[in-house]
Amino acid sequence: MSGVWVVLEERNGRIARMSWEALAAGHTLGAQSSLSVNAVVAGAQTDSLAGEIATKAVARIVRLEHPLLAVYTSDAFTLALEQFIRAEQPDFVVFPHTYQVRDYAPSLAARFGQVLIGDVTGIGAGPVLHPTDKDPSVGTPVFVRQLMQGRLNGEYSHSGNGTCFVSVQSGAFRADQAESAPASIEIFTPKIEQAQIRTKPGQPFRGSAQTVDLGSAQFIVSVGRGIKEADNLPIVQELATALGAELAASRPICDNGWLPIERQVGSSGQTVSPKLYLAVGISGAIQHLVGMKGSQCVVAINKDSDAPIFEIADYGIVGDLFEVVPALTEAVKSAKH
Ligand SMILES: Cc1cc2nc3c(=O)[nH]c(=O)nc-3n(C[C@H](O)[C@H](O)[C@H](O)COP(=O)(O)OP(=O)(O)OC[C@H]3O[C@@H](n4cnc5c(N)ncnc54)[C@H](O)[C@@H]3O)c2cc1C
Picture (cartoon, rainbow, N blue to C red):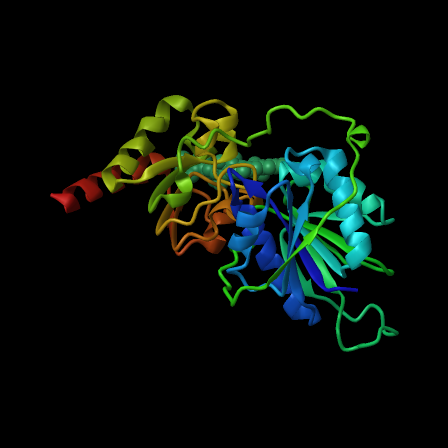
């Protein structure tokens, strides 16, 4: 077995942010299990991507290259990674939980008689489940997944022999900053025939248009269902303007079409890490928290003192937003004068 292999993905010619988060998850696994952490990237020309990865702390980098990997297809990626995994026999394969990974990784895992432990939000050190293993002091990692729309956490561990396949949720791990001396870069050329590819790729799916880059905003005022109706949004917009902040929202606001989808924060929206995140009338569901828990300072306004958002807030205001927000806006404006 050859340690932890993280499968990194390209977007617009660069390694995508979620892949760095997957690498961070790979480092967590590597540290817990005393295994080397390695990276693999698939495509037709991956030299510059491998160069990007080489600045990070990885033992080996493999460029999985073939002309038929130029455009993503489930068949080509599954075939290529299957051959690579059979050759390397990793202990763990870690993916970012992207749309692409959701498409091919479950069938890839099935080819090895395994399941994909998908959309993992945390990795912990578990009890020793296999006392007959060579090193009984090393516990089996426990992977945390959300159940029942985030109301419960389930703990999963990999039993039996063979490779463990895991994908990690967007925002659940802080993008890996660990840097090191350049690692060795190798090329693996899979055997793929055109006739094995049964699908014709269309336009890649984009989660949102990303016309608003909340990811680089320093100040964010985010509004939730507590605002009650679209006509009330100017109250929070005024506070955002006074603070020089971007306006963001929880999912129900965007689902209702009150604000565009690119302003949604959370597991199916954008991941943000501003200096200030002001949550107005947001309960703090886990799917929202994973998108903003990297914020430096969280201020929450909610009329329910038991709202989960207060568990992660640095400052909490228990009150009616229709009273608190206009008062806060006036206070910010007069402080500026
Ligand atoms: C697969 C999946 C993906 C998801 N992705 C996301 C995502 O990316 N982002 C996201 O946000 N959600 C996401 N969700 C939805 C998530 O589970 C929650 O339903 C959602 O975050 C709740 O939004 P909310 O906090 O605005 O609303 P609610 O949970 O309804 O909370 C409203 C809050 O407002 C407070 N309130 C009401 N009136 C007032 C008032 N007058 N003054 C002050 N406070 C008031 C209430 O006390 C309450 O806490 C996802 C769910 C699933 C299943």
